[in-house]
Amino acid sequence: MSMPRRLPRGRNALPPEEVARVHRERLCRAMAEAMVEKGYVGTSVEDVLKRAGVSRLSFYRLFDSKLDCFMTALEYSTELLLGRVAQALGRSGGGDPVERYERAVTGYLDALKEEWPAARLCLVEVYAAGPEAVARRGELQETMTAVHADVLGATGEQGLLACRMLSAATGALVSGPVAQNDREGLDAVRLQLIAHVRALWGSGVFGAGAG
Image (cartoon, rainbow, N blue to C red; front, top):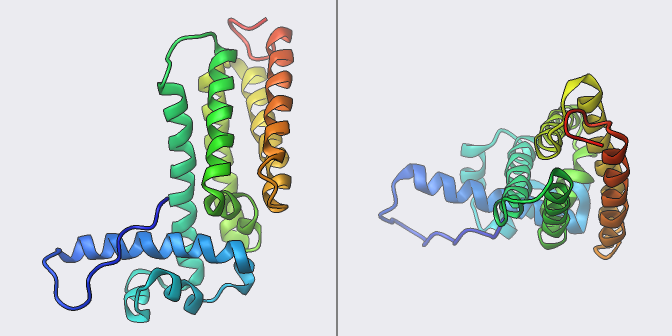
C-alpha cells in the first residue's frame, strides 16, 4: 500500500473522481502509518492530514469521521494482504494442497513483514477502533476461512470447521509478533503453522483427498 502521488496544488486536469481516489488512498495510507506511532486512540484527524498532505475539507468530503477513514483503510489493507496471498499461489500453480498452503502462508507472512502499517491496522489497531471495526474483522476472518478451504480442498462440515479453527489460530499467532513489532517472530509462526497443517492433513481432517 504505497503512498499515492501528491496532487499538484491549484487547478489540475484530473477529473474529480480521480482526485477523490488519490486523496482517499493517501488518507488511508497515512492513517495506517500514523497508527504505527500513536495507535488508533492517539491518532487524530490532524495527524492523518499532515502525513497525507490533504486538506481537512477534502478529508470530510470523503469521510464522516476518523472511524470512517479507518474502516476504509481496513478494506484497503485487507485487499493488499489477500492480494499477496493470491500472487504467491499464482507464481506456481502446481503442487499438492499442503504445498499450496505453504506458498500461501509464506506469501501472507511476507506481506505482513513488508506492509507493516497494514499488518498492524488489521491485526492490532482494529480492536481499539470499536465494535464496528471488530465486527468487520470477524467478517474478514470468514474470508480467510474460505481461502484456507479453497487452498486445502476442504470438504464437509469437519473440513470447514478445521479451516475456521486454522484461520482463527493463524490470526492469534501472528497478532502477538505484530503487536510487539517483532517481524522476525513471524518466521517461527510460519514453521508452526506448516507443521500443524501437515499433521492435520495426515489425519484426514480436511475431507476428500486428505490423509
